[in-house]
Image 1: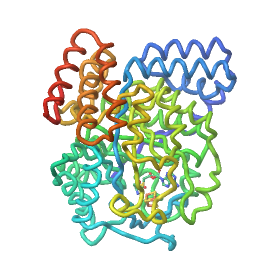
Image 2: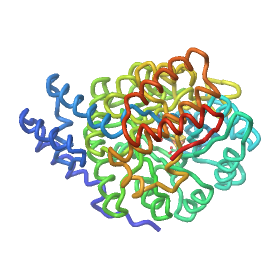
Image 3: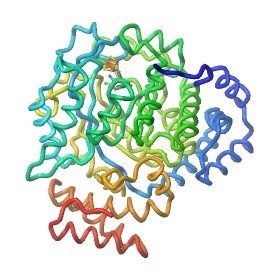
Image 4: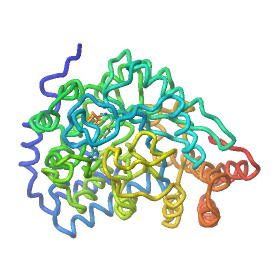
Length: 463
Ligand code: SAM
Ligand code: SF4
């Protein structure tokens, strides 16, 4: 049914490349950073060299280069979304996750479609436009149709406050046929994390259920793309194994997707393991990633795949999230709950893992805007068919500025006008004004036009 080439995720090559580049001279590091500044991405040896940086001076140069690339490509935009956990039923035994089958210490729920609609309504009323639908790997009676119905339920809710305009999903690997079905429901990104690319560790931490099959999981994004899903999201659960190995192996995965489909992943997620109810390993990760290494990971990924979005979830603290905006993060979740039904009524104990950032959306927006970042709720690209290769073609610095910049500003204005608290509105309006004043040419004209339309009472305007 699936044919994973034997040398796909070539562990020997990863170790060899790391070993060969483990003590780079400053001149070598600077050479890689100079190449990275050209924003054309990096090869495996380049990435290995960057993972070897420990000297504070070199680290500062890495961070500065990542910051320049991030700002050149993405400007000050940060895309916002909320996860929507629809079920914590699961037949797998991932030792790090509270949802694992044998964990008796959490309450199990698979939300009804009515309940999903109510959760969606809470998110809409807060101002969200993008949702990431998340589930454990076991569905109620209807089986996989439950996921299809749930996507439909989210899109079906429209009230006087708005609607969700893009549903991304993070659910267990599907068959090509199932991927075609979720595509037909209009999903944006299909996201799946390999957790660890190290096969031996993978077997040790996935002790039961279908998820034990490494190849089935690692080939999921191939099946998704084969089914016509252009935007796929990749990731590693940091803490399970050596982060240097994981970044290198994930790069192999990315290169393979690029080679086969002409386009790599749309996003990379960088979840770091957090404590989870009744999980030893989650509280004591075998390969803990320090805060400084975590920042390094984000900066390296920004340089290695400059046009791929980097997602930072609320697993991390507000401070860490702030620090990584400058290093390459382009999307963040906000106001998240990881327990099914948690938006309507919170029950922290049934969550998947503990969160580092509990602030409500409005507070996150205020904070982000105070730092000079434009929170964007834009969903234009996907709705205009600018996905996959088309998105990557567009994602050249100048072009992004002409589309995403103005769209980000108009979607932010829509948020401020319809949902924000007075304090957030004041800070946000000032930022929009200053940002537009700093623009020139077509970007300025477009931004002014779109924002003025929102001011005149129109919602959902974009170019
Ligand atoms: N059940 C599906 C799966 O495993 O692919 C999809 C959803 S799962 C709820 C989403 C992700 O949560 C997992 O891929 C894993 O990386 C992450 N996760 C699980 N336990 C975690 C923990 N203790 N800390 C941080 N992230 C965790
Ligand atoms: Fe289930 Fe996913 Fe948690 Fe594993 S990570 S136990 S598959 S919900």
